[in-house]
Image (cartoon, rainbow, N blue to C red; front, side, top):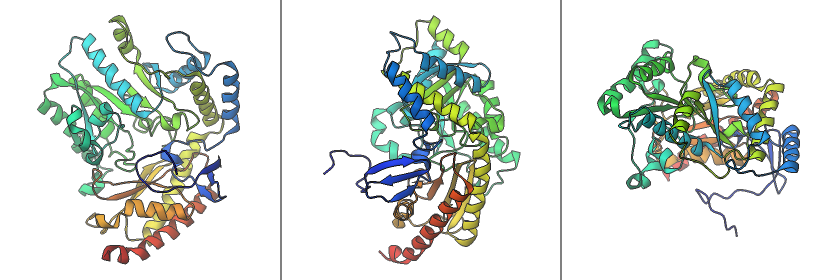
Amino acid sequence: MSHLFYQTKSPRPVLHRAEGIYMYAEDGKRYIDGSSGAMVSNIGHSNPAVLDAMRAQMEKSTFGYRLHFQTEASEELAEKIVARAPEGLDKVFFVSGGSEAVESCLKLARQYVLTQGEGTRYKVISRYPSYHGCTLGALAITGMSTMTAPFDPMMARMPKIPAPRAYLDGLDADDPATGLHYANMLEQKILDEGPDTVMAFIVEPVGGASTGALVPPAGYMQRIREICDAYGVLLIHDEVMTGGGRTGTFFGAEHWRTAPDLICLSKGFGAGYAPLGAMIARGDMVEAVMEAGGFVHGFTYAGNPLACAAGSAVLDVIDKGGLVAHSARMGDKLAERLRGLMQRYPLIGDVRGKGLLTAFELMADRATKEPLPKSLNAHSRLVDIAYDNGLIIYSRRTRGGTSGDHFLVCPPMIVTEEQLDEMTDILDRSLAQFMAEMPRMAAE
């Protein structure tokens, strides 16, 4: 009997070892990590260079509290991140994960506006659906009712605008008018809330778990930046899932040449070798907060030297292997294969994504976008079938967590074309099995 508990009671085997894109259970069964865990293992498992860097750091120190010591590992990693960040974002605050990165951005934003004499600004506008983390502060800006409803009395809920799901609304995502249509909802929300109360807008450049690799329509990201500038609203890019090269650029927002005021970074940035995340901030914002008395915030493991040594080695592996460009190429090939499955299976209603942040969505009717009946539990059943067949994929309810079924297919950035074929074959068999079960499941 296990003394651990997580979200569900779904039984899973004991992990014995992992290497590259493959994971092996204690009974010897092999699984393809088709989702990089939770879009984390960007460079694959057990990379020798990263393990060597971690061993070397362990010989020096495994912990040094940030108020007592600077560490070579954290300084080196911060320098590498700033070199990749947009101009002006030259200060880094390390954390242990995505939720902490989001919380850090929210708290620095608030402390910054106080230094500017704008204490009435506290609201953070986000999108619905969206996911930004599981702590109470991050949940307040998360747009997924199934995750937030139990905690509503415990947090200050923040305003939302619709996510730009053009494919569901019957709009052309390639038409700049569509991008303006959705982006201008932010301006209207700022006006409705009162511009002097709105502190920030947070957005994933490419949607993650909540919207399944949703790519913004043409012009959307640029117009969002313009609106934030016009009303003095800080722009936060949640790059927890998109950062680290998965979309084919190191930061997802690079596809649209837009720069935020704050960046949240985690997941693939540390690639699963150690708990690691970061807030990247404008230097002038940090300077103002430090001059006013310091950043009132912190975590015990912020800047942990072992985690930073791992993160630095991960970045080296990405650079030396040309994995960002490789991710773009393999992402195109993965999308081709998923569209091929879409031609064979009418229940696949949409394929979308950037690079190796890719998803497909199941629908009862591709033309009307009607979702499959909730009773089918497609989002969990197809995952279980694929898992039994040796492929790990990641799913969520598409429409606010209550209906719809999308599946993220996001293998490590080292994946080869032959391995994509192997994944596609398993997914093909799994879809066929799911379709064969549908009449029985519907009857039940």
